[in-house]
Length: 50
Picture 1 (tube, rainbow, N blue to C red):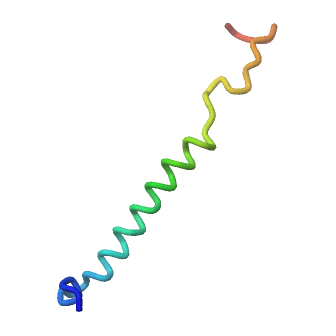
Picture 2 (cartoon, rainbow, N blue to C red; picture 1 turned 120 degrees about the vertical axis):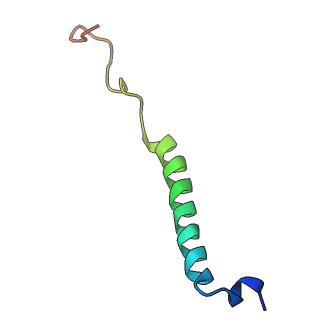
């Protein structure tokens, strides 16, 4: 069949690597969409510290 099927634990290793890859991609994409700048809520009004 496949050459990696002969290596003991290869399926487990590929599963873990796939999970880490998907988590890394998700954190990168979602982090850019959801995360806002530090001064996102600062309207620059009178109460501003700057």
